[in-house]
Image 1 (cartoon, rainbow, N blue to C red):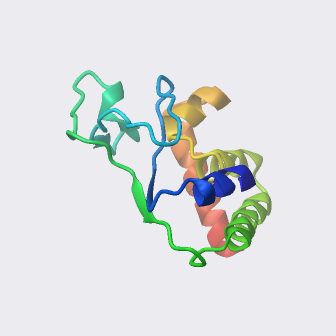
Image 2: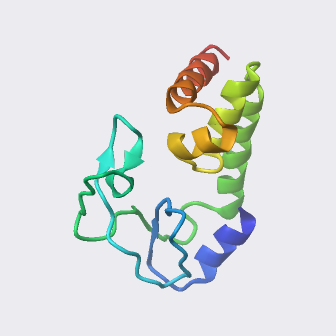
Amino acid sequence: MTELITAIETSGYEYIGIRHLAEDEHYSIGDICRDSYDWDCDMDCSTYDTDEPISLGGTCAYNTRIQAGWDEKEEIIDQMFLIENLINQIPDAGAKTVLGYKYLQYLTFKEIAVKMNYSFTQIRRLHKRGIDLLNIL
């Protein structure tokens, strides 16, 4: 995480875009990404992975303006540790693992299902259980 923040700070760019990459995408800072595709909310995946992909005609990303002093590196790291500590308090091992993959490693439900060898539906249930448990901590 610290290496990423340092790379952003020293990039010289005024804006950054953050997006989840598909397995077949590999970019370096400054590269132009391929078009983004509409999201299939029911399957929690990009339509790029479906039988009927819907191109959005450009690249979508979380667009963030870099403002010196706005979010200090230490503050970002502290927030990430806070999230990790909250997830680690979840007593259900499966729910804890799913939330870690989703919010610390930014995997989709589909990717988590493959990684854990669970069904998509099981992952969604574990995610909901984890969120419910976080709400009572």
